[in-house]
Amino acid sequence: MVTVVCKEGYAALYKGLGPTLVGIAPYAALNFATYDLVKEQFYGNGRSKAESPITNLVLGGITGCFAATCCYPLDTIRRRMQMKGSTYKSQVDAFRTIWRSEGYRGFYRGWAANILKVIPQNSIRFVAYEVGKSALGLKKGKTDT
Image (tube, helix red, strand yellow):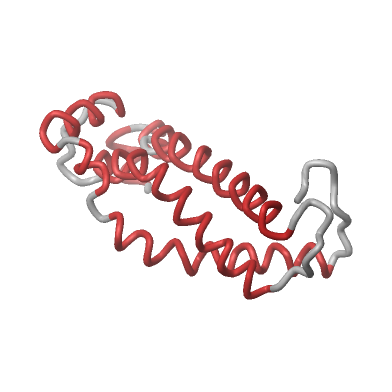
């Protein structure tokens, strides 16, 4: 870290922050929003069905897959910009270069491997989220499902 600061300055420590935030913010928003919507559709607004951790596990996996698929191009751009020897000047430049040289498929290289990580991760995340809400005795709010 000291070497980076000495050679490139303090700003170099935050070099990848912009692309990371551009990718993570929409993913997190889409992930939680779709989970809430799918959960509401499955269980019903009046909670006619009792919630099941197994069902929430499946719903979390499905919604994680959806959010990851929608946001994967942003993740591809971020990863390629972080690669050693990257020649991209900006995120827009990376987008244009990938689009021109590889087409839309270039944005989804590595998607299958990522989904193998996302599905179990997201499934566990939302089951833990529901168990945590229940353990803390949190009641359903106006914006919750």
